[in-house]
Length: 201
Image 1 (cartoon, rainbow, N blue to C red):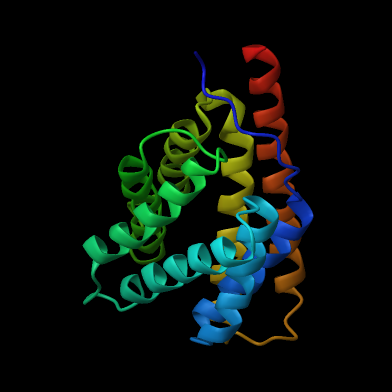
Image 2: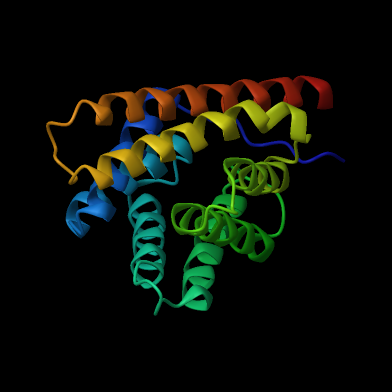
């Protein structure tokens, strides 16, 4: 029987805004700000209840913190924390796939993004491909259905990189463009999930 997500109304605008806030916190090393953004992402994206939302957001924060040092980070610890997030989301019926594989794919796109930042041989297409693989696994979707969402999220990352290079200023208008790209990405992902659920009926 095809996996189907339990009914939950994902808010792509709220999730996109929250992820933008989380990225701002990450790059400014403002961990409380990042946690607040992650909490919004989990609340509006998964809806795990007050305690579950906080616990899941905490695991993403810790995973991000152990990933953050470059080059002396801890990918294995990052995968452990992300496995716990995906396990919670799967138990609640929000995502499909194997939580451990999902965590590997999550950290794989983190790595792809970092390599894309520093190695010209790693292209934007490599980053998009990493995101498509993650989405296909956790949403049990076809690559063509989630590619647009991956492209938009990759665009948001490029805007984030531009913002970081310019000094991470909170009044930089690039942040507004980044937020809009993330909102559009999650709207495209929601549309892909809706189409998949209709096919499975």
